[in-house]
Length: 410
Image (cartoon, rainbow, N blue to C red):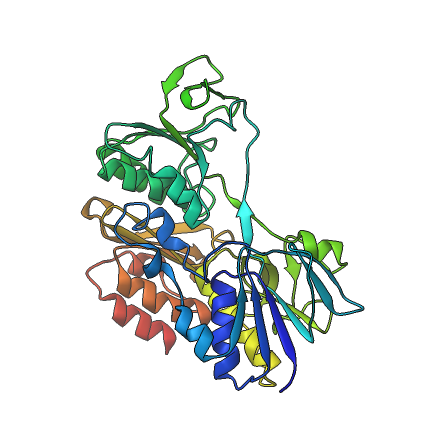
């Protein structure tokens, strides 16, 4: 193959795409364009072990320099794709250079959702998305400091857990009436809120967003809408992310809550594919379109796109899964909740090991497994195969879950 494939983006999806393209037999030119000064790396540890100082940059890398050299992959870092011309099949870079492509893979990922608040530009106010973001936090991330986390989603609570363990005084502010409200049931929210409170974290839900950050150059105080003032040596904002689709929209690709792709990761332009957080893709197992923000999706779409480009197309259809590490707890989520009409708990939350099953009648839709790897692993198969389980029997922990799963899959 003498074609040139350009990959716009250098995150998890891009890193996997390079591996899969070479494994699939593509021996043409591969060029990866990344706006950060780092080779493709894993983002999940940023709010966990990397923030805690337990691992260094090198441990984050998906592949090291040698892989890219040995496989003749060009990587251009600290450079951004600013636009592309679909008719000419060219891309323009932030350094003014222009490149031609035969196939273009958009792996532009996502960006943090920013908030409009007085004082948001003060020193000591951070968003967490990159290695450099964490590096800027470390000066203030010290025992005894007052940390305010805005947002009680995955990122906010993971940061709170690390900070509390490190001895910071942590307050979490959330607009919704419970933590992780977008992704877990009230029973699971209540469990995690209790765990954080027991660790010394001040969780405040249902907060009016009209607050202000005060300080000279560096943040010192958060003043809430009701006039209460909270000490703040550091503020971390974690209110979600948005797909990076600006260059795709400007080029006229079909976009709708992400770059619209088919089951082979092909966009509305036959020469362009898209993968990862930035895509809106169909899932035949769930019977709907999705935009997912997960490592699993990034990896699997990258494999799908590579197979498409290598002439071995295989449709992408997998049950989504996610995870979050907080203290000694591993929350593993499989499936997409939302169509359920009841939540069945298996195990006692006080034991810090239980699972929440989201049911539509007797149809299993999704599972939140807290320190329950068996339930998590088997539920992938159960949901993919449309398994049906009696809720009353499912709640009975005296019955082995493996036996339930085996019976449901027969």
